[in-house]
Image (tube, rainbow, N blue to C red; front, top):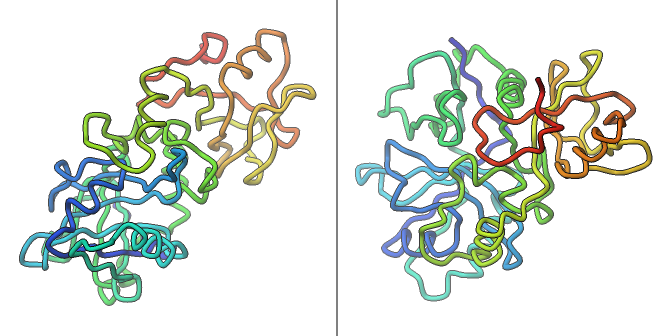
Length: 291
């Protein structure tokens, strides 16, 4: 019944009288759907629609001071605060980096911890991932039975990408990072930064590049950032891998054409077999569907 301390994750707090309207006008998720019991995947985009930061948004109850806590890569916490500050203007909002005294836990195959310990929610991306929690850093003990590597191996096996690991910030659209599939983009909410581009991709169905799981022949995954090729043609790049499986950012239509032409898709010279994530609803060319 494992849980893991994700030491590379930090916490940004956003609070004040205007916290909800301020944040809701910037991020991809709908703050109306974020409660103290239900977190939500979200992102802050560039005006051109590409992901600058991704995070999990928790809402704090009144007895904890209210506001929102963003579970984000720790090395990007200060930059996220700086970027949010660009939009603050006269909004009654305070932005704080709480990474020093708060920590992020992930657990699976065990009950959620007591909500009195901190902010707790089922992982908003996929129930099979388990639960996610923000707790006091002093509460982290040796009681966590799993490592961050165990968590990432599980994440990879389920086909769940993470920014800064499986795609580069500033280079991927939410659809490419599967945020549309993992409840990270609400298409019915009001305006937010980059919304026009994201909405256009949704309604026109123009997302041809996707992060999808892949199985590596021989059981060893390629390093992150390796080119994926079919013959001399580049199709994409590798993301993280574990246990002979990995995530790959790839043009699905070009991959299907390569397979139809009899080419083997390789990452770092290793043959790979592409898969459609079990949770995905987007169309995948027939040539890529594993029998």
